Image (cartoon, rainbow, N blue to C red; front, side, top):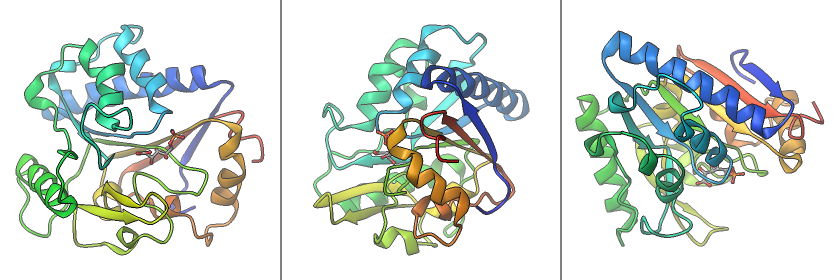
Length: 244
Ligand code: 6PG
């Protein structure tokens, strides 16, 4: 592992969602107090749903919803109403239930047929939002990430071309095993975040997590997550940590 990340092992996935949601609220309030807004790139897949639902439930107080700007770290090449859509998961579980400002929700237009045009459009959205010159990278306050059993994160999959991308902020990444493009932030765009938080649950991730923490030469995309000045924290439940 690169810089010594913080690893929090929680007894159950429910405990993990609560711990991550408490930190989310703390990071959000710190960013809003410091800069008037909180910029977060949400992760996809299934794991974050539990955290998103908890945040939407009101169980965690004082979340500055109207000052949070939501992006996505990655998306599938599907329309927003697809069951596969990471946007739809976050909207169903959280965004449709809390007082966020619609103008602060920056959805990846993943319904577009031309994947490279989709990626360029979203990259431009990020550049305009952060006021970036060409070649500069955003600093998200928080990037949430998951991990697949193959060690992928966001849509940075083993053997995919995006793993080598160090100029672009956001790309369309052909994923052979999916037979389609996925859309993803690149390593430089993720690694500049102030906070990077992995949420990993379940026994099916335990063997990979052991490799991540015990072999930093392993060919696992998650090992390319190396914060540049920010913090890296792993929220792991006991099942996923059972081989550590
Ligand atoms: C996606 C995700 C992806 C996810 C991992 C873990 O679009 O699928 O962004 O990187 O975080 O695949 O997914 P689970 O949480 O469903 O195990």
